[in-house]
Length: 54
Length: 242
Image (cartoon, rainbow over all chains, first blue to last red; front, top):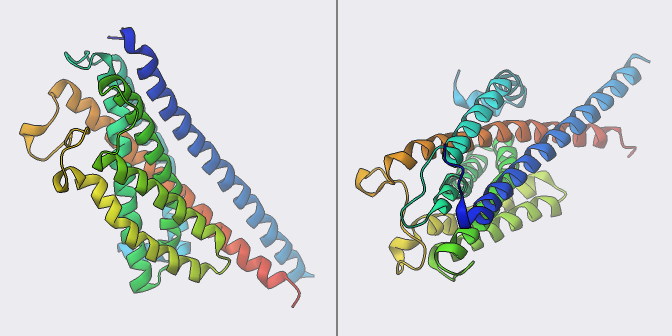
């Protein structure tokens, strides 16, 4: 195992940090939007079914 | 099953729902494995010291930034020729992923360059065409948001994608067209003589595999979301009083 980053620690950790934050953020935003749209569609289709069945 | 059957939104939703859980697990394992191997189990480079570890995030992100645009180009051409809505929505879903990959490549490249070249940025052919590619990603996403009519938005964004492909290809091959600039040539090539050392090569391949799998997982998830958004719009239009 080689975790000695020496003088470049800030640079290397910064590069990995930016990558993980951006990828994590993208996954989180995508999952949140997917959940919201699934809920919206389910509500709308539920309302339509109720309207049709009287 | 033919690939073209996925053009049917209902079929796409069924197949993607079945594939997605395994794809998430596989991408987490591959990406986690590649990044941990690259970060913790590779030696320092004799010239670049520990900054060589940036290779495992910078190269996969840069590869994805260009190749996602190429994927969007293919999806746009399918839209132009066959008018499959799922392909237009897949291109739309891919754009924010590509833009994120471009930002990662630019930022990690800047951090690396500051240590190795003594500067964050240079108007080097590859760096400049990458920056232009990022602007194209922003323009592409803005165009989708600006236009209310989905078919018109799909047509115009597909056209923009065709134009932007010139810069996607330039960012990959710029070093062959112009002088070398500050940026080095390809880290990976089918020509084994130009590849990085084996001790970096295998974790790099694993990391690239992880980025590709993460892209596929996000692409399926986001395309499913776009299909649902389209259905929501359609239902709301039907329910609105004339």
